[in-house]
Length: 143
Image 1 (cartoon, one colour):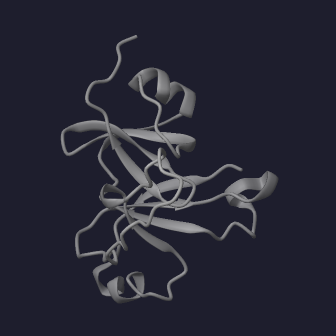
Image 2 (cartoon, one colour; image 1 turned 180 degrees about the vertical axis):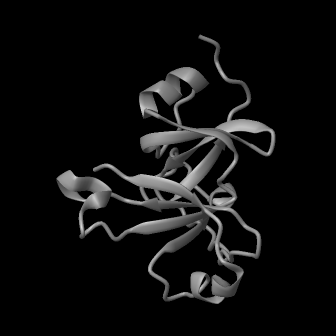
């Protein structure tokens, strides 16, 4: 299903609502996602600290699609707010193009990716099947 992503600047007077544990979105710090080791069958991952939006933060909002109408479907209600995810030159790429461009296969990568330059590092955001994570590329392949 087709998703939609857009850059947002939260209103300072709504931070309490945005950071609420009962909000209708999932806050994720894409720079601090702990991923399981694909070589281990059983493992216990550390609990992640709660993510809090601060005044002045820029976020990436992602609404997951549902069914044939994707994000336009009324049933599309799974929403993520990604902190530390907005850099320069954001561009959607297919997973296959990303694997070719970055010369890497990332375990747990699902769907398309968003390539960008974040804090002077080129890489991409990708869906793990549970959260959005950042992958920092050491060097981008040339075409």
